[in-house]
Amino acid sequence: MATAEQLKALLESHLEGDDDRFLSLIVQLAAHAARQGHGKLAQELRGLVDKARLAGGSPAGRGGSRHPVPVAQPRGELASLLLASYPKAKLGDLVLSSEVRAHLDRVLLEQRQREKLAARALHPRRKVLLIGPPGTGKTYSARALAGELHLPLFTVLLDGLITKYMGETAAKLRLVFDAAVKTRGVYLFDEFDALGGERGNPNDVGEARRTLNSFLQFLEQDESESILLAATNHVALLDRALFRRFDDIIEFTLPDEKLAIDVMKARLVVLEPGRLAWRTLGRAAAGLSYAEIVKACDDAAKEAVLHDRAEVSQKVLLASLARRRDSRQS
Image 1: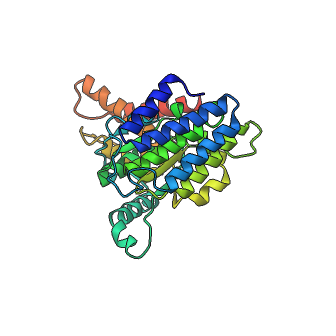
Image 2 (image 1 turned 90 degrees about the vertical axis):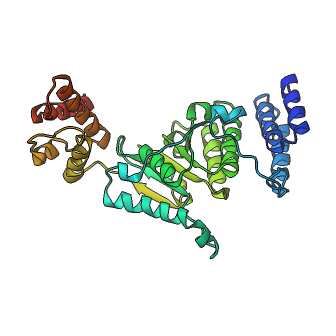
Image 3 (image 1 turned 60 degrees about the horizontal axis):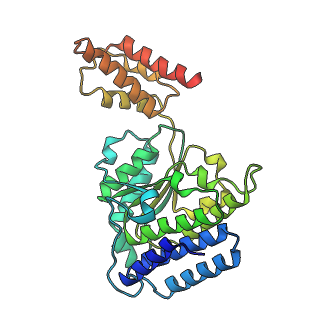
């Protein structure tokens, strides 16, 4: 049964004409009923919510004005599910391979020309899967896409999303996808393998399968104008059914020698790099991620500043790169 506070919240949302909140509260009641063992009631409540939404039971569905969730402070339960930010990052801030840059440029082009595409019944790339090792630029690319398009970045908080109770994670997922409809932005599901793990895994449980099935359904049905990004370091763990649901899959890789040198030059531009043997440094950076190379450069730059030296020492930078490699192997 609903608690007094839940009934009060339902009445308040009804009196205020906030249909979206009203329906979201019903979804929460359905999840509560499921946890109490009232599976039939939970199913009936969700069915009524789906029916109301299909019939236009929200202000937006009736043709009224849309009331976006305040992006600075997502309200209600969304506050525990979404972290909002306003990145000013640009793709030009990143050192990327030509293949990754081409994919990201295409996403931007289609988004900027989405009205032109819509006139021909075509849809821009919106659902993108970012895969690759840690530190290769996936999360920063999400920030750059938001910055380039002047959109807020909403990072989905998995610790608030994933629960052990039957039906609750799916209900929270619905709130996130509903928010994407109401407020256009870049929505990032980081560490996506926690949600999209392969079904049939020996460690899988029924609730994990239901959550993945719900995500697949929401993703396929989503027709918002938001950009939905999923990023993972462990692509092998993802369920194969996920891949065809995305408009594009962008694979990030570790930098080769040339890109490693480009990263170091860009990071050390604030100081005199001195007489550095770039080829030697590029070879020393082999196998390190972009993030690890940046941290090694920062260590060498700070060493120079703290000892009042105008130039970065190659010896110090080589040692810093070696330490990053050793810490990875330990």
